[in-house]
Image (tube, rainbow, N blue to C red; front, side, top):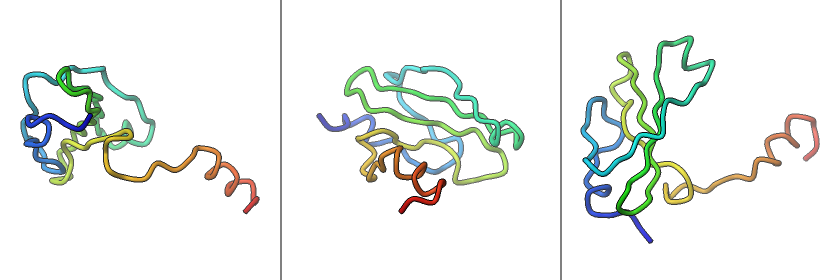
Length: 91
């Protein structure tokens, strides 16, 4: 199932863009690199369609804001094994 109309209407990569009332917060995501830069990362899911979202709170980056994540983001998902294999020199 694809994203609902409300999710499709969310403006991505723009700081302070609103979400919609059916987004459920899954909580803050902790990342040492982001914490050092005072960036907060919150994960959401849509109660209507199940689309997963990330919201980055970064006052210094006007392109922070909503980003679709997971398999419905439209981006290829690379297997976790491949980066590890490159890190140890295989492949």
